[in-house]
Amino acid sequence: TADSAQLEQQLEVSAAPVAMQLTAAAQQPFPDVVEDAWYADAVRFVTERGLMDPMPNGNFEPNAETAREIIAESLWRANGRKTASAEAAFSDMPDANKAAIDWAVEAGVVSGMGNGRFGSGLSVSRQDFAVMLWRAAGKPTASGSVSFGDAASISDYAKEAAVWTEEQGIINGIGGNFEPRSSVTRAQVATILQRYLTGQANTTASADGDPVVYFTSDISASGLVAVYEALN
Image (tube, rainbow, N blue to C red):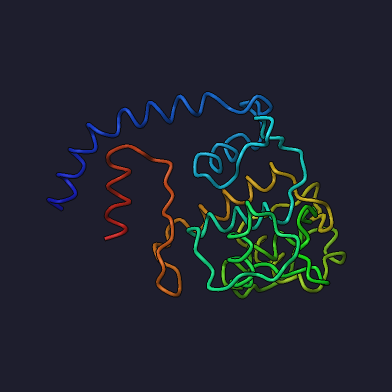
């Protein structure tokens, strides 16, 4: 359209310095993330979008386990940092993650561990992360069964989530197994979040009409125009 053509001409000029900045950022991974690591692109994806933060020492620490409040924080940020209408009634919520936990509880993404505790600091298993993603996506119906060799060890409450995440290509196996009770590492979280979000990138509004983020890796003028046209 005429509007799109005019926008593309404007973006040809304005996108160049942005591309240079992003290229420079891509060449500066965390000290402990080598460029050819299988998770390097995902780490850039989540950090550039503010979905995950560096560790206090400035490293990403890809092999570190991921705590419940960190998963809640990442999903909250990915869903637009919405404000919950009520506060969660847990005694162990870190102040830094309180808004995220309030949202996650109200949205039905997470629940407590009993005795008035959220379980802050506890690592998240791979099956529990699948459940959180599935709930955040609105509990979509999954068909079939998982193909992993250890499918029988997946807890009943996580089976549909595991099927859905496999069907959508969001969570892959490890050596042919799902390893449901293994703690999910920060590298795995980054990779899974990238797959989860880019798999939904063509959706411009959620079921309830709230806007969602439209991700694109193509920051050329024509690429940005494609986003503009998809949203209008």
